[in-house]
Length: 112
Image (cartoon, rainbow, N blue to C red; front, side, top):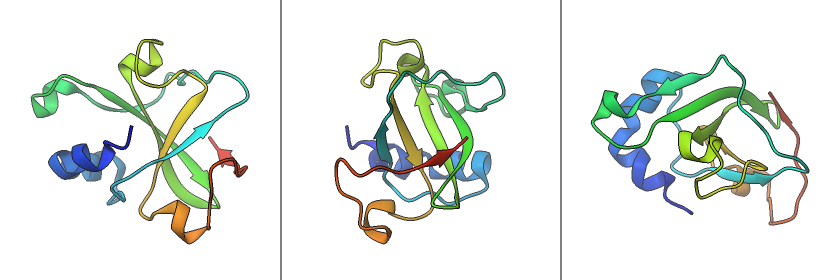
């Protein structure tokens, strides 16, 4: 959807406090071979914390041996959001596409 930069501009302090990382204003969307469901132990940004309407779960992960976070809204986790459950969004402190010269269709490995 390309709207993480919009939300990060408004909520950067919340994301930084939750993750301990200043995130790049964009995510890398990855399509998996099968649906992914969040584990029980996630970091949460609750809508009530910032006066909004969307709560987000964050899962620590690594991509290209870099610390990162899988982000997923409650609606996407419930299967009624903008992404199906086989699509994950990865956020980190850099633009992964540029640093690793990624193009649509490239395969990457994420460690959760």
